[in-house]
Amino acid sequence: MTDSPRTPLPMATTGCSCCTPAPAGPAEATAPTGRQSVDSAGTTAGAAAYQVEGMTCGHCVGSVAEAVSALDGADDVRVELVAGGASLVTVTGPASAGAVQAAIESAGYRVLIN
Image (cartoon, rainbow, N blue to C red):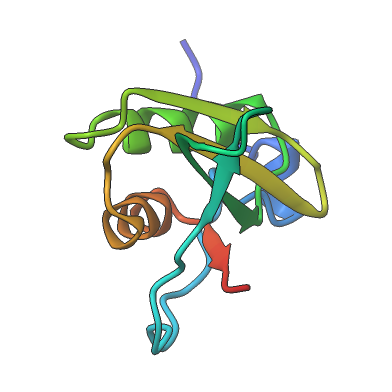
């Protein structure tokens, strides 16, 4: 058996956050509040949506969904991937916005503050 040189995954050279996490920068001064969903009757449906930057592939989606799903109070997590743009992460349940932001950032992505 011969050792062959390792080559990075294609996305690792193009900036995929799950393969090459961005260096840690200064923390944001404020935590996101999320956007509360409202049902047709006008009452809060218990979901908050977060715009997340840096997600480019299915592995990114899985990383964020896994990190947020592990939180107490995150009953359901849905991710709408917008590769190269701001993806939408919707969290249903009483998980705090600060905890959701911390989970997303620990997975290597940035929550955009509205």
